[in-house]
Length: 358
Image 1 (tube, rainbow, N blue to C red):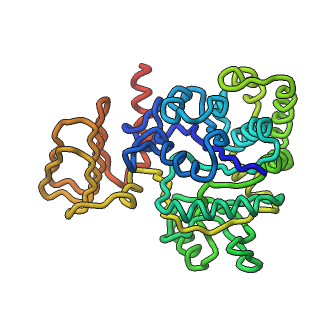
Image 2 (image 1 turned 135 degrees about the vertical axis):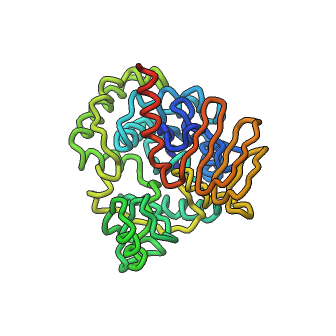
């Protein structure tokens, strides 16, 4: 059974605007180090899976960016979605592509834009998951929560019947409010849903077909078209475009994970952060004596504290009496936003786009 990895890199990432744009989303940014998020992800996984067995699922418009950023990946391993149809469609279709190349394989599905500080511990847990997934089961990696986070989904696991730190999953829970998140922590058998899954390639295709009737029909149509062709990349994307557009837009969590009876979870503590918003950078970077996170060559302040300052240009940024703000300056735009309002960046982008169409 060969180990392969599928890196999910199709997200548009508006939450880090103006650093991220539709043309260059979060996975292509050097947010947490001098390397891009996707480069960090690939360099982490290549320690146990060679480049020729790493696949990247992405939107067709990011092909050139992927090739530039990860030139070691064979071009036929870049799986191009003709259109965005959420993670169930992406994983099912990618599974067919991988199965054609590696018929007997176990697949790890990993986000392209998460931070993992404890790489050795992570890879050890991933290898354990690969071993467990040799059976007809789904294995996910759950993050041990450190505080009552309301921005993540949760995994509830059964406390009994564990096998070498591997537990049966009882349920998947949607993002809770603060009071419910506190109760999850108190109960001690809840983990953050990391979006990392391990399964036999053939098995997950069958699970998707089992629980998702529309996907079953579309996957069967694509599978039939695969039989007599040996194409990849843009040519393959165009070839199955009509069928792909028939997929319902449903996540793998809702479509399969919440319904499958054979889901296991491995709790992990690997210094994980999904880097999902500007506020999440507070858990990544050290603050100065005034509580500011400063990523700028020239920043001067008076009576300013607990801010996030990012400047991609050489101009001076000066702040007087500023508190709890995010200031991001790029060549094309300047964002000034209270920390508690960062979730409304998408609204602002929509407003900007509407103004352009007038």
